[in-house]
Picture 1 (tube, rainbow, N blue to C red):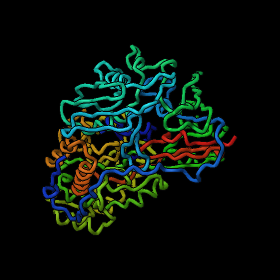
Picture 2 (tube, one colour):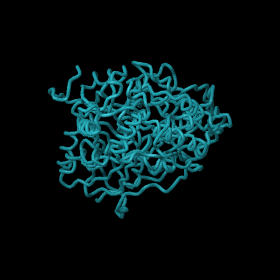
Picture 3 (cartoon, one colour):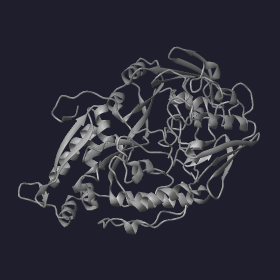
Picture 4 (cartoon, one colour):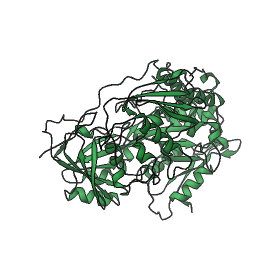
Length: 554
């Protein structure tokens, strides 16, 4: 049941819209069709393909000798479902056709040393590296890749989908080292989904028990080999023949804990050397003795979403004014700096980000002027009114969320100072989600996953606003934006330069029309003891992308 702010609160798990969809070009100029805006639009985005730069390094650079052992702790379930196993296992044991540049999220060679996309964006051809072997010594072949793609894309696949396969038509091995994947229509965003898919041996991918793997089926090409499982503990050894370079540490142990409190207790007791943590854990992890923190932005955005079906919010000028009324630095202070301010729908540094993206500097005077121009004026009681109707809005968010709840309170305060009557309402997880999917809110403060691909149509395309299922909770609609998302899928040869230019126009439109105010990306951490060096968590590639560069004191 929903409740006003002053009702007793119940704790709930943090919720992010993790749809699992890895969301691709003739250029379309559509900003001219946007609503009149007081924002000055920046220059067009830089026309250039993403540049693969050197991997990010943690500081200081490790000088420790190779060898030794390390224990990592995580929260989760100690199961071997290939689509639900701990992220460390997924990253350490298995590889994918392509890897993710930790500095900007661009795709780089992985098991595939190169690939081509047809001009009509319907055919991908991957060329596998020579000399890559599975942990059991068998060579990696195109048949393994094809079997994996077919298994994960099958309608009979059980459990959580691993990626969005879209209009997949076929996957074929042209020879032992060449894989061709075709689509019934252009679908460029699938390059990220297919490229980052964990590849399994053919015998495993075709097994009847998939997606659940037995210990004997935990065979990958990754930096670590599984040796044994004992309850919630996994023991792994370095893969001396790893094509990406053998890990420096010999023996690895992964321990799975039921919750964050148990994980922290294990670190305090020196039972583990490394653990991931979220912004919500910041106060607790900083009090841990001997804890060293390495941070990055989480691949999520905290946004204030507007319901365009609310009459007052159907006017882009009103949404822009409310954006100018938000002091994001004050919001950041309210969560102890546990976030990175963002101006658009992607993380700073993302390869497709536009240059000179317009933004909303805190300017309450400008906000009041825009509202006055839109007909909203103080009726004498401190509340803005238009045609005799006061601006009264309900702001919904999650109860007891250590990030969202304090932000909701501060947003109410800032909008109230503008003359908007705001009621904050919090709900438990099921009630809040039901309200979001049914579009029963005016303002919605939420955390959403930022996909690796520039395609974010699930959040903004007009046909994604179906009540009860669509993720376009605010019913935002812009026909030219819909066209741009379609063009993102059919860019000739899925050219990164053209896709970046299109994404830049899409992001500028989202900022200008303001169906949401993009506030910040929460931080994420790798916490380690003094004996560990080399950690470099990435907002794009994850916490464990460079485990072969980790070192420990012996």
